[in-house]
Length: 519
Image: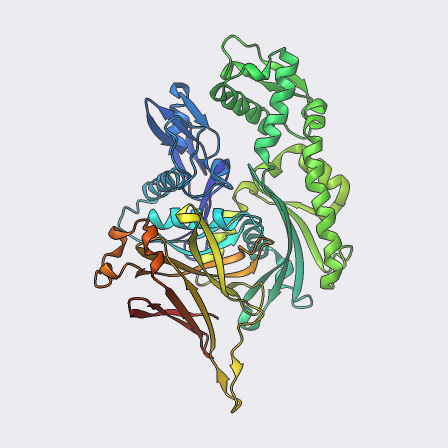
């Protein structure tokens, strides 16, 4: 089974590959069948519950976390999420949440374990390497074969191009698209080229991206809630976190019910605060409360459009720029659409199902028969996630840079392998190396763009473990091993294949690993 999974801040949406179609997966809940899984978690009597299980028992909760994804964003894997009394680590909380999602998907599709699941997974375009690593690990722990991590705006662009006639117009074989993606907790805007290649293949290239890591529908909810509490004369500072989370859900319900012709919005504060009267707010006041947040997204749209001429794109030429495509759960808010259409006019196109566009695009990318190629450069960066700060942090070490990885010529003019070495003194008994390739690197040097996981390997740093096979059970911190010197030697061959030789130079043993091929 091949899926596209958009692990959202507010909602997770899943689409599947089904004989050339890419339907959204629906789930049974008390209100009926719905097309998403909530991104929340709660604690009830010391137990953590996720998704719909959390929603159904939220009235019993001692603590409510409106978004697991937002809570772990920016945290290291072993950082404590103290919004929940049990104080789980970020990695443990995300592992639980993803496991819940996958269990729900298996039940909805009658696909019980151990039947395999392969999936393309979305991440925000401006996600940190830490967030990407946590996401990748959580899906692997849930038994999912991760086909690749794709930026959310790129996935939405794939959905647009898959059904949009403009890409099939032979007189205009190359088109450009700007994606405006306002999710529950993040905002990304990206410029993407859509090109028809040989044999009908469709090529997607991320040209430029801008984003805000903590701005989304949740922030609009908070702005509306602040206005409602002020009108009700309720001191927001006196609300405990659980009550405030419930009140924010009431604001979200009012926001989602607000239409383009609505005159008022009603916030039912009794959902969170006993005996509180419903607050009726003029729609114009709601829009004004959210306007500063929407304006921040418009400023990034301006910045992105200003980058396009450097790529040979005239933003005013409709033959080149197909649309400003609006997606994401937060993008359906009437204030967003009004502001965008006032600024950009006819270029603005709302996705048919804004909250599901990314998941559908991921399913298309996972479809072997769809002819989709996500391309952000002729070659890609290759590197490895390593432990740092005594295992408290994960960092990306780029081994081969995409601008330099072409094999060099030897004295006879033949291609010679490119060789890179790393030497270090370990602090753990076992090295657990997770290799990956990525389209680009962010400002901090971390992996970004379309990311594809490679093989994982383990190597015994501790000489006493050199003959053991199950090294994972022996992994632990061991500062005393700093007496051992480790060398990694990577070879990038003319055919694109990569091998690594790891040696314990102090104790005199080593192993060679075939990692695969970098296209």
